[in-house]
Length: 501
Image 1 (cartoon, rainbow, N blue to C red):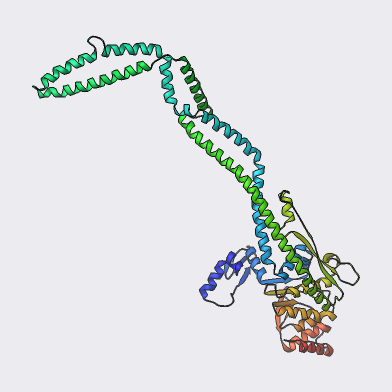
Image 2 (image 1 turned 90 degrees about the horizontal axis):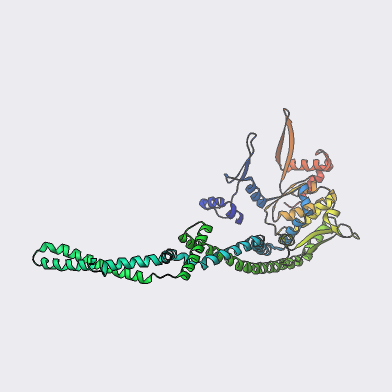
């Protein structure tokens, strides 16, 4: 259900729309055409072949000659151990902590790889912000500085000429201001007699006011115009700095003010990154310690499982003709410090946990235990697989198990024991078994015969369900190569009658 919710929610939606209760019907189909790629469907909806394989793996587990070799893989062995002990939640918690640690550790590595570049940029930004801030007042007041410099550069001539203008307009005999006053008095006399004179009179009043304001401005300006070589040098120095910065940054004074804000913002970000790096370093250490603790809990839980799994597997192996065999688990735990290289730590703390383990077996008394791949023959491998599956039967979630010639290397004497184990598995799963042993075929609840025929040069495969006499004849044929032999037929009947169906 969880897989469907994550990968194929449409199947659950169809189910809810149909109002079904109990089990969810899933129909997996695959169409293979000669002229185009095969197509996969789930409940008649197109899906990727990868998705269909994943879903099929949740429903059906196939064990054949090649699949038994998976037992040699330590990762598969570790998965079986976790399944046996119901360690999924503990393993999932470890993986979540490991993923968080890796994510932050990779971010921290990114900091380290860019450290030199970041430091260079910080130095440059600090210098640029410093020189722009130092010249900030001059940049903001550039227009006022230019005006003051112009006055100081021409202080001598400007003061003399402005004084002359002021004298001529406001102080000399017959100056402009006096003439305006005279004209105003004349018009005021006529304004009472002739109304039309009022408008030019008001204009004269305005001109007089403007001229008086001009007098005040010129007086103030003349008073402020003083030769000051030292102040002029200061202004020249400040303006040279501003002009240099304008050329350097390719903008005017207003643009320099904007540039100060931009550079200061970038500087603040990089400085914040430095503080963030320190915080991230602390977080990585915490994440690593959290992952280590989770890995330790996982390891302790696994260790507690070993004796119980060993007892159940050895008991099953004894029933399967491997009495005196010894089954055990050997692993190597790893340790690592958070300051080690990330790639090394990721190998040490892999997705399966912080230990490497391997199933070991001594198939005969007196022989030392060794990894399965070194001691198990084909027949022993099949029986070990059955023993493990028997121990895991209740805990395996896969509803259908298919065994392809699991009896390879198993003699007729052990056939009934293998059949018993398959029958026990069938109490928890749907079990399909391809077999050549009559004892196993007779124990099954149903019997399907697969045969090939050749018609017109083409080979055809047929699957036929056998019942009653037909099944007796087929099992007799498996016993003696001929269903017409009375002893073989009698043995077939005995096997079928002895099997509880």
